[in-house]
Length: 71
Length: 351
Image (tube, each protein chain N blue to C red):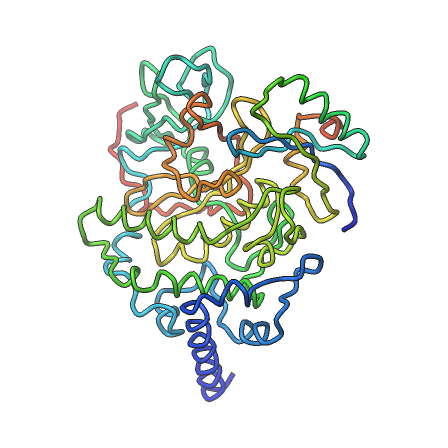
């Protein structure tokens, strides 16, 4: 799969959400760690997901939630 | 197309349905419907040929056509009467956009009207009357009824999703003519056909509603996807390849589930709205679908990403502190904007 964006995801009580959409893996890894520290919630799980060029849903996910929402 | 050709095509699709029925009953459907993780193509060439011969069922397919195809034995009794009941009548619960508070206060839930609140959607509204071009709405938390333009109320409450021809929503391509989408829809009909034959919209309203709930829950549960990054399944843009075992974010999952449910909406008498929402706790975007039953107009949330095939809407929007962490922000897709005069049955109020 050609990866064009990275979703920073977390789940609590088996309810997964995308916290941020980033343009690069490095940025996504940094954001994941920042969110983990910020939440300080041992019950939450965190992971990165690769989004392909066809995943237009990132436009919803990127709204007002992080770096990709700019502009 | 000549009558002979049409008859031959009907015969071929009936034969295909008979073979699919055997597959569904023997538990072999899931295996036959497996797709290649990269391409999304059906792996089994025999299944591919069988699925291609199935009839396409779209949101526009009539119950009579379903009977003719042999997918159901008969249409639910009094179905037309259920659909003919006015959509906009006194007591109908609505979405309206006004000033709303999402502050947690004890055990009462969130989403109440608040003059100092933010401009947002609330589900805590019910239709009371009409006054000229405006509708009079009771909103929980407001000391007196509020007035909304009819056009706004219709825009917020009419069905909204895929057109009967399919299309693309949240980047997911829905093709009701794709062999695998046809197979999933036909398998769904074969699964519920016996119960559908006993559905009688002339029966006791609560019993009717419960049966609709049960059937829609069963159909919505056929959409089995994993959240992106947590599975090994197909992660592309084809709805039919995502439906069973694919992976996607919440917006993708609800696009697939909503489009799938729309293929059953006409015969089971319900409506779908593809919702764009947000969580309360983390304030991040979240996608889900709203299902409204006819004739009861009772509302539910279908949220496949959170493993909730059908949750009562008042529960689904209750309060993050109680595990129900979502609010509505808008809708996505093609809205059914026309409201016929016969769909409105409200007392007239003086200005």
